[in-house]
Amino acid sequence: MFNTKDLQENILKLKKENDVCILAHAYQTHDILEIADFVGDSFGLSKQAASAPQSTVLMCGVRFMAETVKILSPHKKVLLSHPDAGCAMAEQLTVEELKELKQQYPNAAVVAYINTTSALKCECDVCVTSASALEIVKKLPQKEILFIPDCNLGSWIEKKVPEKTFHFINGGCPVHTRITTTDVKQAKENHPNALLLVHPECIKEVTAMADFAGSTTAIMGYVDKSDANEYIIGTDNSIVQHLQFEYPNKKFYPLSKNCVCNDMRLTTLVDVYNAVSGNGGEEIILGADVIDSARKSIDRMLSI
Ligand code: 13P
Ligand code: SF4
View 1: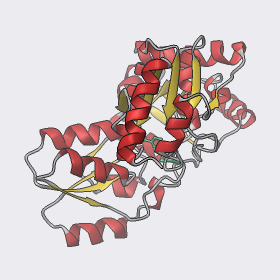
View 2: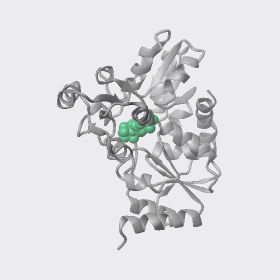
View 3: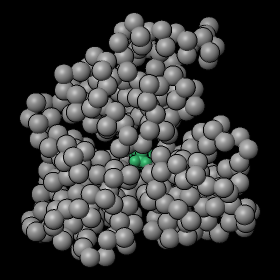
View 4: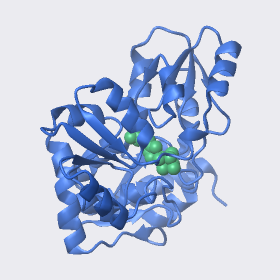
C-alpha cells in the first residue's frame, strides 16, 4: 500500500517518463496541487494548455476544462482525471436555446463563460473566464451583450460596465449560489476584523457585501498583497485550505460550509497516478469541426 508521499513521488517519476503535463485547477486538493506542473484558475489553465510542451496533458479539474485544453491543443492527447467530473453550470443551456436567444437579441455580442460545453462555445462570439470577463466585455465593439450562462458573474460585470446593455439567462453555479446573505452576516459577526473575499459566481447580494470579488487566483493575489490578518473566503472551501498553507500566519474562514464543489472533489491522487501510468483518466475526443469552431471564441479571448 502507498502512502501520500510515495504516490506523489511515483507520479512525478511517471509524468516525466511518459511526457505528461499535469494541470490542476485551484479547487483540487492540496496533495494534487503539490505534484502539478501548473495550478491556476480557468484563465491561467487555458493559457497554460496552449503552451504546454508535453505530448499528453492531464487536466485535474472538470470536463469543460479538459475540453478547452483539447480545443487549444488538438494534436495532444488530453486526459480528464475523473470521467464523472462535470460542471453543473456548463450544461445549463442547450445549443437550441442559445440559437433562440441569438434571434431574440440579434445585435448582441454573445459572450460565453468558459464554463460551457464545447457545443455552446461554437455558437458564441467570445469566451471569457471570471479573470478575463470584465476587460473583454469592455473592449468588445458591441454595445449589447448576451452573457451566458452565469447571470451572477454577468451582473457583477454589468455593474462595472454601465455603458452597455446586458441580457442574461437564469443560470449560475449551484455551489456558489448556495451562499446566502445570512451566511455573510453570520461570518462577519463571528469574525468582525476579517475582510470578505468572494468569487463573482456568488449571488449579487453576497458579492455586493464583499470587500473584494474576483477569480480564484485574484482572491489569492489579493491576500498576497494585503496587510490584513484575517479573511472570510466566499468560494470553494479548498481555497481556504490552500491559503492557510501558503500564509500560515494569517487566518482564513469559509464563508459557508456548503461551498464545496463535489465534481472538483471527485479526483483523487490515485486517479492522477492511474492516469499518468496510462491506466486511467478519460481521453477527450472532439470532432475537428467542433475544435475549429470553438477555438475561434477561445482564441479571441486570449488575443483580447
Ligand atoms: P475560476 O477558476 O475562473 O475562478 O472559476 C471558478 C470556477 O467555478 C471554476 O469552475
Ligand atoms: Fe462548475 Fe460551480 Fe463546480 Fe465551478 S464550482 S466547476 S462552476 S459547479
